[in-house]
Image 1 (tube, rainbow, N blue to C red):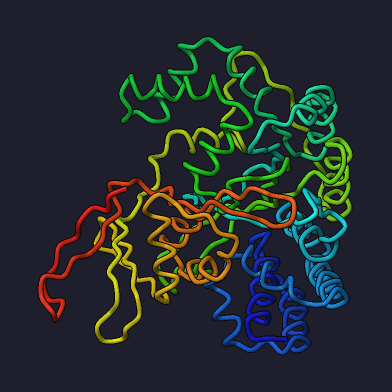
Image 2 (image 1 turned 90 degrees about the horizontal axis):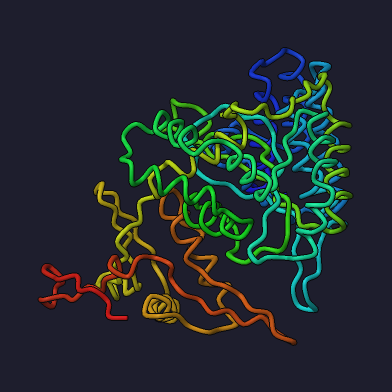
Length: 438
């Protein structure tokens, strides 16, 4: 087992212990036992504070099948140290089950060369509290058969989910719900939630809400506005919120960033079967009684769970994009560099090989078609913080062909924010940043 995997296990142990906001003596005893079993030292616990739960789970996918199963059993036992498994603990176990223990069983094959597996994804958020759990159907391209199937069984899936305190969200039904309310009532609520917005902006939000589809929700809300870290093309899937990761783990380690994390589960069977499997798994973990969610009452504007999240997404300003400056070779190191410059004087440098630099520059200048982009993506994704979320969404839209994957990679960054540095003296003391012509 690698140090990185020990750090990942330490993060999962920490999340499980603090899930109910109570740290009991029995939990600490069991934690110490697991630390001894997996040779986790204090340094691993310390380093785990800078890791999200989703990153920790992804790190452990390289373990063997038996090791992953044993780890899951250990974590589940830890969740029952205090004789109860609360909602947050049950959601974390649900993520571990689908992503570590039974991942291969729920893999969907899209073509002979591509498969989609359950995975965890994250997005920055401003709140740390766990909202009511919800399941959302997502797709990047309209799937007529899936939508027909969901529309036919929506009431049944919605009722089943509510029995466990979970909301099942289908965007067309949600739009119908809002459109059944008076427009002046909905816009007044938006104005109350965001009093700094003018009438034109409020009307724009209402229009986006009234015209939202499963596709536009994915592309405009999740992918573009919220910066959820997932591929721009996604198979029909269920997006399940599993809670919030805090990075770093304690305020004493520096400014805290909260991330809402999701289990992205591809539909490996008909939607009703998959939803039932998720709910039954959740039910087998959670110990507390469920509080059924009542049906929507006319004139009641729900502002919790997914509903609150959706409006927070629509009202929040779009994420800040950095200036992307191609610096060329560093005269001291000879490494080719790309600068990410924010208006807040925050900068980060990405170092690349000449080939990687050239590939990335071509992406900025209109795009490049290639079937070999994995190494550059790996280097880019090593960056952390604001830059990571910006670049992770810059990568590609893949198209599957008979024998290989060919990707057209193109930066989604605003063209006015892409520059190439021109040095005015041989020692690089003076320079101009010139807009890249596309």
